[in-house]
Length: 581
Image (cartoon, rainbow, N blue to C red; front, side):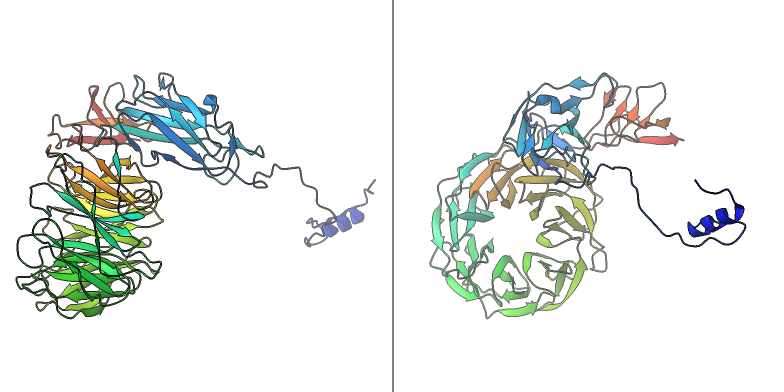
């Protein structure tokens, strides 16, 4: 027992670092350390959710969806137990997470590393999917569903089921090489029906599949490209144009590591023997065609993976001059497109350099078809494919680049001085490989279609006239590793369809536009201004709710006025909202 002597108490205080009247505090000397036992939730490996198929992270699913597969990072226990999941939809109060939610019945099967929930076709509404942390890995460690790095925590995703824009994929074998990759469209045989050219690896080879006018295609006729691949890098560049001015579409394709080939249409949909030309570099990755030197004949631009851009001037007989070569401002080119960015009447070149620091580059064109030095623009990740479209209501072409690995696209809006604004990143899916700009829903606005190679989906981004985009849908493609994409009305029903080539499964899928393709924007039905309160919980936390009324606007784009739903997809409903604190 300690003595109560003041001097001894002071000595002890100084010894253990307490301040006393006899002197200043000195650093303590630790004799032992005692800690209460703590649960070390990082000790064992954590099981997490890698994603779902179809993906729910994008916030939408098409009406008619009948299953969701949850993919785990490792084998789990409890993956086949229905009580470990919950699927609910909005009840009468139009808010998720309340007692009147409708619980969607389902059955579940599991492979150990994935679990599939099967249910009746979902109708248009707002849903919440929950995967409970009662699921564990084989060591008994609870699911890290909220992805905070610790065991425990449910996986919760809210999503909107929207009108189905496209049918389920109609899948056929590509029958072209091991890896079908690139798609180009033309009426090669002049029968008024759209045909498909498929570039495939290895070879490289080109397969021509004649269209039947109903969205189906005949088996391919295979054409050699006049070269042989000797590297592991796939050669997949291809472009269609009328190179000899006879009114028939011809082909230019990558042939080998340093050459491209031109295949002239024989007049009946077949092709003459390929004629090869230097690509202006090594590993021709992609090709484009346009009139660069302001004459009557299309020229060919080649983006070489080695970091050079080759330009071949065309002539009336379909032959080409010696290739001129230009630096792309980087290396490892993946994408290429042509447009007049500076409005001088001459085509410019945009390429994506798949390297760090990540960027795209524009090489402006001159009247004689020569190119100026590359001007680079930073991207948010490694850029893959590029496309050009008029995304806002000016007359200047804008650029979209697919961002590999990071799962998104970068949109660059053009400025009047011929330069581009800084990139605006939009999330899509896992490893966006190819982008395509087209008016998918025929509302006179250019949309973006992006292939997500690693999760087998395409994402639709719907244009809004001002250069921003709404998420239209993320759709399964029916194959693995989609890379090639085209948008066209293949079955002549006045609706845009999607044609997708798959590198992994070497298949070709058609998704037919459905009757439920998003309609033209709705005109203003009612314009009003109300005081709104901010809702703190439930669906769309932070939603605006008019006190004592049925009018609300939530964070997912749903607007209700007098109980009438004007969402969840884009509509021109004009309402003024003043939030009350």
